Image (cartoon, rainbow, N blue to C red; front, side):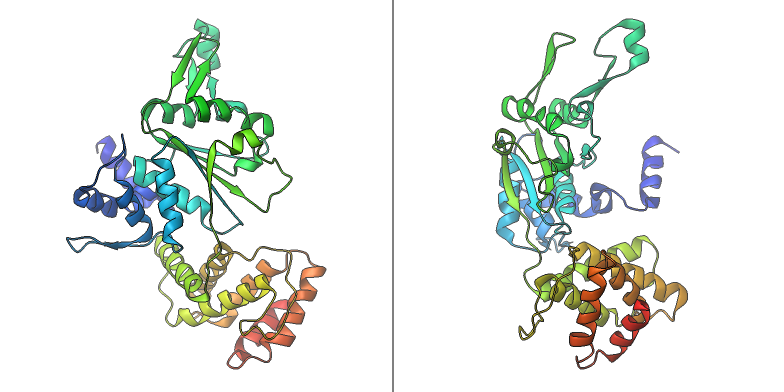
Length: 370
């Protein structure tokens, strides 16, 4: 078996394939049909990148599935930013698909979404700049052979798109090492008396959670280096149900879970509960309710429904029912055992109990709460 065949086999068995592998056929079809101008080293034109994210039907009949359900203009602004010398910052509350959009943008633009720096409180400067192979360094001294490039350094050298996840979780002094890279498009190598200059095609997509205020706020100097696009929560219940349904179907297929008949009804209920508790008001606008401490994001709704689907498949009759999602909802809502449990019980008794057609859901949630 050749290296390429081995890589393809591993990709086929991957629990979560990279975007460029999972949607390789769509990217190939877009590239073949794309006759618009492409920026240097881009795999697709900006129009095709936007089509890849938002979905559409090509002239040859190929259907491009939507990767992001939201305002088209936001996607167009994000794609256009990457075609300039400005870096892109995707900002939003947890669960607004920042990472998902970042990955698919990198896959469509560069064909590689793996040039990734994962931001944490312990992210070192070497993850942003470069490190050293200490065996080589001790044996032969500082040299290019001893240098271990970071994902950003590789992206600069190859004209690719690098990704930085959770930028505000990275320590402030490490964040500041980005300023020269983003403003001068240069990475100094003082140990070698050299520098790496970014070639055309290089850019950076960063994500940040705007609920993480006070963690490591971006300096004004660094924030000026980014064009910021705020990704909102789904505007309507129908849009959120569509997002959850699509992602649950994708995740379920990757886990070999059978499709759940009539699952859409339970997805609608999960989305309704999350939206009402998140907004602090019932769907009809008549009843004000308290909100729990958690975010109750779309991503959490996807997790709840996927777990319910697994329960229905392995321990039920394969039909997604209220009892399959009740425990997951409880776990998502009750993060603070004292305060959130009170909020949840009040919501059950004042809203869910009185809602027509929700008796089974009320009973299942009551049983899960005991």
